[in-house]
Image (cartoon, rainbow, N blue to C red):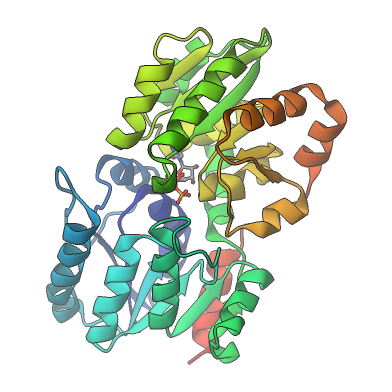
Amino acid sequence: KKILIIFGTRPEAIKMAPLVKEFLKHPDKFDTKVCVTAQHREMLDQVLDFFEIKPDYDLNLMKPGQNLFTLTADVIVSMKPVFDDFKPDYVFVHGDTTTSTAAALSSFYAGIKVCHVEAGLRTNNKLSPFPEEMNRQLTGRLADLHFAPTEQAKINLLLEGINPKTIFVTGNTVIDALLYAKDKVEEVEDDQIESLKTIIDKSKDLVLVTGHRRENFGDGFINICKALKQLALQENVQIVYPVHLNPNVQKPVNEILEKTKDVHLINPLAYPAFVWLMKQSKIIITDSGGVQEEAPSLGKPVLVMRDTTERPEAIEAGTVMLVGTDTSKIVNHATSLLNNNQLYEKMSKAHNPYGDGLASGIIIDCLLKSN
Ligand code: UDP
């Protein structure tokens, strides 16, 4: 069978890399090719380098001033020649990005079967997160096979009338990627890790921050930055914040936090350095989906700066707390987590509900069985 794996952003690349590697182990069964849209360019390339993946098709679609309209149109139009050239039997897309939804629609138009990895996550609030929730719902409608990371995700799909025979619970491939990276980062020579070592003050509690969600642009990010500024005033706290390249994030972060004592604003890190930094941190404050799935496997409690979540499993498991973007709420929760040992131990020792790192192999077994 011919398999075309399509992705475009950093998180998709991290989560699809283990699946690409697993497919490539079976050249007798699959002819596997990778197509990147490069919805992100630099951040995508860093991941491709680390996992040693060379795309067969690179659409290089990232443009200055890129928006959802032009990107969606560009992905749809650019897929046709790729399909004509490779003629895949199955297209694999991931999660909830514009790349995934547009590529799934193109595959549907071309009569190619769509396989959706990380299927079935839902907030059921079409504006939160925007546009990801609609992207994942639309991709779910277009998909022929649904690889759900958890039982809850499967239930979400069943509630939408998806045929149960097409849904497989696999765990999340992000854990496969993390387990690959976690030990490797201790061995590799990495300039980013070396420079992180020079800024980290081991006598303080390291708070790692990331944020990029469109729904937090504007007031959300302003409130988040004010909270970080207050948190950094505490004697025992040091904040390291790799700032996403989106100008809507860069602007408030630089305006409010530049030159703040004990706040280190740095460029987004390549995946190995980010994994290394997660390992050094005491807690993580983020609006990222992937980070809240990864952190529990490293025993790091996570505060999520959102009001809704498509990842309730993490909250139920006790590894994650939803704190929204209210300044005092973020400060209060972070402070109690940093100072209350009992609460900290409970969160850091909770079990990761997103799997044990075997998801990619399970996905391939399920694909073979579904034939
Ligand atoms: N990540 C990274 N470098 C960074 C920040 C995050 O490599 O500076 C990784 C992180 O380990 C996770 C993924 O990027 O696997 C999450 O990406 P992001 O938060 O952008 O997207 P989301 O997961 O919310 O879709």
